Image (cartoon, helix red, strand yellow):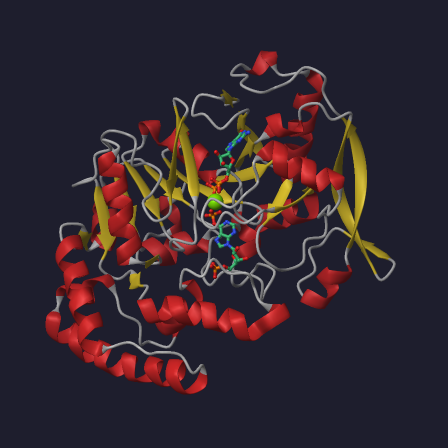
Length: 425
Ligand code: GDP
Ligand code: IMO
Ligand code: MG
């Protein structure tokens, strides 16, 4: 487990923050490779809760360097606020934070356009976090995006911003009929961000190369989840980056050989926030119960998360895509007290049974889950730290997931606190 990737296997919010913070204990580096402040990673240390959006979840570990890779989309305003917030809590943020000069900048016009794009979609809106993610990655692909390194170069910044702002203002004013942005104001703001973030902005590709060559231990922290991947997720109801394994290589500039183990973070049931198909969603009492018991409200937007039973069709698909070698099962305690636990093992689409995840959206919408029932457990698992204390039925449940995912159980999480964790191997 020298260089380990920790990746969300469902629709995000699997508990990656908790797992990353726990495993970061002995890591030299924790590196994020994709996404931006759409992420909300919760860490609870001695009952104190922290929610990170951009800063990697290794920041609470002394001696661990946190890297924000080139694959990320960074909102300087929200990053500065996050740094200040942590400092106020006495968390050290200084030379332990490195930001790639190639990471893209989420500009205010991108945040506005994210909201405006959603508005015109009406009923078909994606339900984005409105953090400017889509428009920023669109600018990246269109090769007109601003990168963190541009904030440190006045002439480059001026030229690039002058060009892009003309296009953005045209769109905002003429198409959407909204107020545009003033160049001078935005330019000054961006220069100031550069000045304040300068100590952290660097060539992280070269840093990672040196670190890997020196044999440093690395944890690659996933954001979002496999089913939100722009290529492999439930398109178009996805985010705009690659949370799956390939995102590590492109989003940090490391070769596949720099990853030894790939850990899936698997919530013991399924949730999703925002729009899009969700075959095992329970819109009734059971879903409501999971939401309340599991505190299933978005860490970034506060929106209620949609809830349902575990979906093995999704998990097997995610296992193949990412090559999971190990799994971390979270929130097992939320299933305490259920007499029976249902698990979706296949879909029925147009009367035919399949355990292959359907790629076309129209097929997915028709998918009816086929369930098996497993026995629940009477003794609560909440707060348990030792494997031998887990009830037999709870062990059967986690083993069943592991067998189907063809991966080994690394740990089981039995509560939000850092130490509510049972190590398996
Ligand atoms: P992430 O985006 O994958 O990091 O997950 P979030 O932080 O958005 O959501 C996970 C939520 O579950 C947070 O409120 C965590 O504090 C909480 N959590 C994590 N692990 C456990 C667990 O094992 N049991 C319970 N009850 N809560 C957990
Ligand atoms: P973490 O890292 C859950 C969802 C949004 C929306 C879709 C597109 O905390 O697991 P975006 O703002 O990215 O354009 O929104 O993706 N989404 C997440 N859902 N957890 C996340 O991150 C998410 N990041 C984006 O709700 O459906
Ligand atoms: Mg989250």
